[in-house]
Image 1 (cartoon, helix red, strand yellow):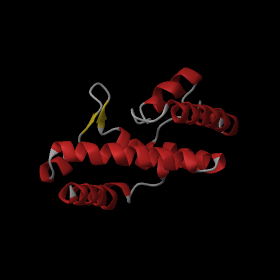
Image 2 (cartoon, helix red, strand yellow; image 1 turned 120 degrees about the vertical axis):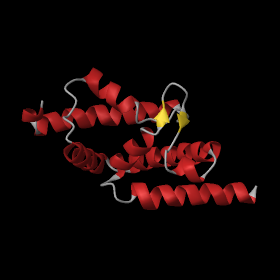
Image 3 (cartoon, rainbow, N blue to C red; image 1 turned 30 degrees about the vertical axis):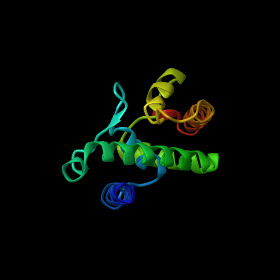
Length: 142
């Protein structure tokens, strides 16, 4: 049991120090980890970490990390979420989604599969509002 905890901590440390720390903001980190999940199987895979650690251990550590990043994003005040999302969209070159359906499609992939329904709904509602606010602020980005 202690070996498993030690391994989990080391995977999270490696992930955070090598891959997440350089990313600009909460949403960039959340999205990075969300993209490591195969949405068909809900299995997380990291090509570099899987060379060092057992795939099951990597999956579990990444799943826990995804949930933690998701909850941290929700803890931010809405105005900070807006600025962080805008920073991410600008840095990645992604346009602000044009309509509610595109917002939903984009943001659904950022939600951990194991998140409670009420947090999923809150996250979608927040990001829907953020999209609308960003469009009001930057109508040329449409």
